[in-house]
Image 1 (spheres, one colour):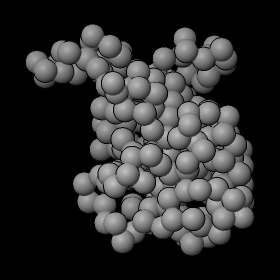
Image 2 (tube, one colour):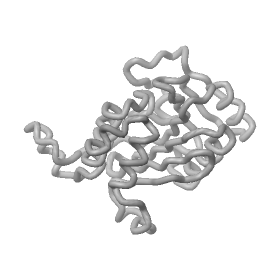
Image 3 (cartoon, helix red, strand yellow):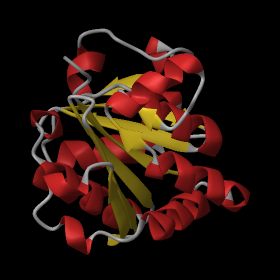
Image 4 (spheres, helix red, strand yellow):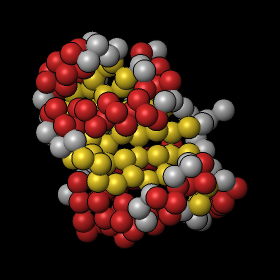
Length: 198
C-alpha cells in the first residue's frame, strides 16, 4: 500500500497566526513552523481524504491570512494533486491522473500549472524542469528509475520529493499528513519542537 496524506503549505505566515485561525475554525490540526518561508498544516479532517474539505480549508486560510496556500493530496501513491491559492482565489490546480476527476478536462495545462507553481516559489528559472517532472508518467514506467532512466514514477511521493528538491518546498510537506505526524513520524531535518497542536 502506498502513501496516503494531505497537507497545506502557507507562504510567509506567522505560525501563531495560523494556529489562531485553526482554533477559530475548531480544527484538530498540527502546524509545523516555517521552513524556507513555508509553514505546513496537517489537518485531521482533511486526512479523511475529502478533497472538498482540503480545498475549503486552503481557501479559507489563504483568504484570512492573505497569503499563498498550496494544498496537497496523495492518494495511495497513485494520484498526486495540488492546488494554488493566493489571497482566497484559486490560481491553478494539477493532478497526475486527470482521468480520476470528473472535471479533469477543466484543469489547466501542465505548462500553465508549472509556470504558476514555479512563480510562487520564486523559481521561474526552473519552470521547464518542473513541467517535465509534472508530466512524467505514472505506473510501470517508474520501474525504469531503477536503471536511472527517469521517465516515470512508480510512487507519487517520488514526484512530490523531486518537485520539492527543485523548487525548495519544505521537506515537512513530503510524505506527511495529520495521521503520520500525530503518530510521531517526521521528515529528515524536522524538529519536534517546531510542532504546534491545536
